[in-house]
Image (cartoon, rainbow, N blue to C red; front, side, top):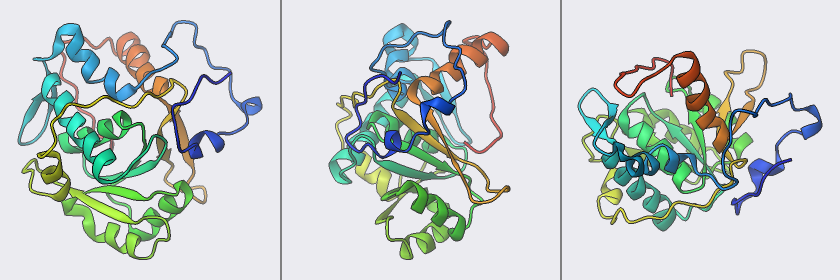
Length: 246
């Protein structure tokens, strides 16, 4: 039985497969409150637990503490809501390489209550168009270095109305970064349910048309609370690198 939803735009929940064909989910060892925002759990909650000055992200040109990441993502989430009119449940496409800026955008989308749609940097306009149309995406956040194919996609799309650049190299010179610099960072994250969709992960399409896998807010935390803790046995002082596209 699905818990309550905080989504104003109910697109994702409306398109979940029938629960009659779901696999059995072994949740006995994982308990999360009905109202849960994974973006908050991965930033603000870490600060509240005393980890604010610990390093959260290391990039090619910078590193960021949990406190810095919390404020950064709050400002980005403010932009999404105040400047672009994003409401909980809207889908936001993310296009960029594995950089701290990409991570910050991803977390901000969740804090705003929207649904992140991450895309591989190598995708071309026609492939992006399939994702945009299937997920009915109106806003894309794109690393300024990868704008060309994104702009081609947007020009031909009946859904995608705006593409906003961020500086993946950390220079903070792109439109999204400039807008975020004007925000207070005082932000209350959207109230989302643990069973609200937080992420649409599209398959590569090797077996046909790309398909979206749908992940709840609690699913993202189970990756950390289950696999990272129990299998990898990650400890606070460990440094991890991820090579697959975010």
